[in-house]
Amino acid sequence: MSVWDQLVGQEQQVQVLQKAASAARQIVCQRGSGNDDTGRQMSHAWLITGPPGSGRSLAAKAFAASLQCEGETVGCGKCQGCTQTMGGTHPDVRYLRTEKVVISIEEARQLIGVAAQAPSQGKWRVIVVEDADRMVERTSNVLLKAIEEPPPHTVWLLCAPSPEDMITTIRSRCRALNLRVPPVRAVAELIVARDGVDPQVAMSAARAAQSHIGLAKYLATDPQAREQRRKTLLRPAQVRSVADAVFAAGQMVDLAKAEAERITATKDAAELGELKRALGLDADAKVPPALRAQVRQLEEEQKRRATRALRDQLDRAMTDLMSLYRDVYARQVGADVDFVNDDMVEVISDLASQMDTAATIAKMDAIEVARRRLAHNVTPVVAIEAMCVALRPHAQPTPWE
Image (cartoon, rainbow, N blue to C red; front, side, top):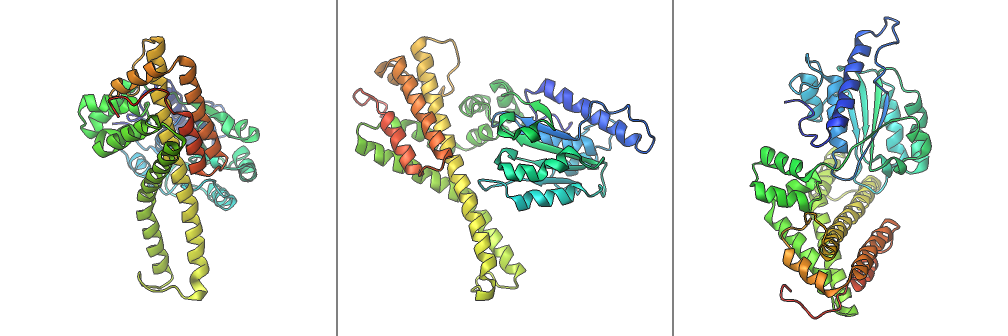
């Protein structure tokens, strides 16, 4: 099993990375020989882009593993370099992941120091910046010199949804690799092979996730998640008045908050316990005034992480709603395409009969407006209320309600 096996639907992109990794091995073999003609396929800075779920982080990890590979075949997946990197424990592969809204300048500066160090065990010092689009311009500028002129043993791998999410000066200094949305069938087959899920459930989950591998696995393995998604899709369509819109919006935000808290609560508690141990305190001990500043700093970081988690949950819900009205539009125009929500055919047909195509497009526009408002820090409940008002159907309640 090679490091590339789980990167589904990206055959051409994998070939590019494999050639680069082979060239990198040639560079290592000829270091100090004065021969500069090898490794032309290799770059010391990469910008890996693609839509959510396309496998940006996985591609970066697989490439990092192939650079550290010690096996006969580059990216063998069996040697110590590959297994440590894929397991996230290789000492020469550094990841910057953020669960906050933005990556801070302090975090970026720490990477510069790490990038300047020679590899201690592997062949390269690899710096992987996931969600690099969360760096504001001044943070990106801090990294500019390090990316433009890295040490000969350092490779930067930046991941972002699109090249336009990065400032021009960073973008122009990186080699671009754009991932595509993997085919639904390929995602379903991966889930079946890896997680033992029923093929029909896997296919339905892959469609509902719109080929997002991680989300497809979550939906395929958790019946409660599938039911929760269905409720989210039905709720705005049941709105008949402004009062209903306010109530539905409150429910959507409350559900998103509950899910975000479920995701972050365990980590928050573990971080607080670890900090108290580092300060020499028992888990249930009261923090003395002299040490409260450090606890407050941790709490501020956790609040920023909670803000991002809530935004991500609401954005996911609105993406699901967009897919529902996309299916409605497809039914209205008779498009020969598979429904994203193939388990809600009755709902789609009912909605399609209640409005014309112009109204359907207007509802999709309303969802997109709500997403933009959230991105610009509008209060979530206000943005969702306005969206729910715009999604009101103009017909009587239907039997599926």
